[in-house]
Length: 150
Image (cartoon, rainbow, N blue to C red; front, side, top):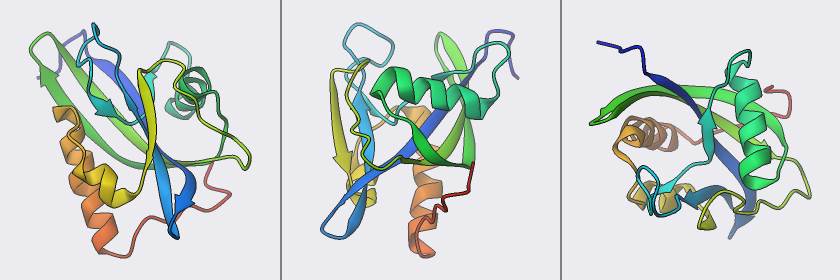
């Protein structure tokens, strides 16, 4: 049952560079003192009134990482009820524009991880369905982003 207080959250699997020939993706650590503080997560945030999910994610990436993206592709979604809140997460794949360097503007830390490293991270429970989806994508040949996926 979905309550009136459910938040819609957009989340980006943001490709930014590579290591050893494998693409790397941005993960950030939530600040202590906030809900799920200290947890590693993919960047993103709430959809505001009047925004589409894609617009919200572009805004959040600029606010949280200081970057713009050149591709954005819907991947999957996840609903989760925490003890004091419920969220609907909309997961997107994105690619940082060439020359963009993400910074942890709203997080305690930022790291670039390969898909295998990302899948090994402990993340909030609402992310588990996404991680399962990502494992399936990796097993079927990976994730492909085209420049025109906006």
